[in-house]
Image 1 (cartoon, rainbow, N blue to C red):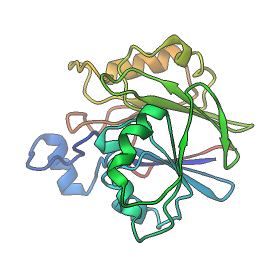
Image 2: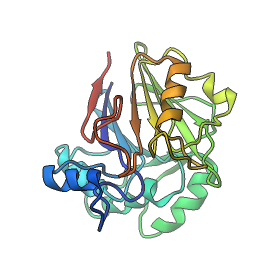
Image 3: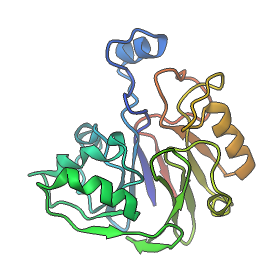
Length: 240
């Protein structure tokens, strides 16, 4: 199983339009980016896209234009699903898997596309492309939001998606013994945002769950580029 961070940014991305803060200045001078957060999971020759961000076209081109075989949506915020329209006239529209509240909200935006819509019940594992996938509920008020656990025979990877630190215990119980944990961390430790984790929250949760490794994603332009355990666009992780 191979995981690629297609984007590691928040809803507006970095560099932020019209911003000259140190992080955005660095991005514009070096070409570094934090595109809107999404993941690509590769296994058994298939490609599973986790969230279809507004930057999807750029993200897919950057990694060599693989055919996307299926999509999972974590929640109905535009920066996590609205890029799905980029599949129009590019490839066969992939099927989408999501919890019922997410599908019910998102699919109305794509009436011009014909695609399969598969409802997934949180905490009920399903298998796709040789991966056992389990959606679990997190706290991202007011949107119903799920994180995702990916398992093969040899590896376990967790992705919190957007959430605050108040993750239900039933979800936390799934996230032990991870090889990699990908965590929402939108702002530095000195700032509090009710529906997201800050950097301290993310690092504290990682310390509690004790994965073999972790990376922060869904980061705003306020997050310094050199903080430990912050993911970068294009980072890849390979597991047996």
